[in-house]
Length: 90
Image (cartoon, rainbow, N blue to C red; front, side):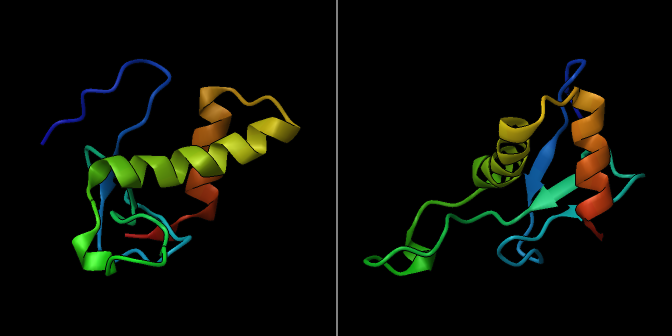
């Protein structure tokens, strides 16, 4: 699958190898970032009955960047460098 990102955006895919709060980076993958594909644990329905997928993976990384931007404005490239620097290797 080829990445269809526009300038300043970065692709993210769901990956069940990621534990909560973790993301993966693989430089030679067209979609280099991977994150958990499930929402945070909530009381009620079992996790496997809840929604899951790539959109949750994107939300995981977006929330990390949003917390950083609250403190310091970031360019897209600085955000990418942060994500690469804090990632586990895929």
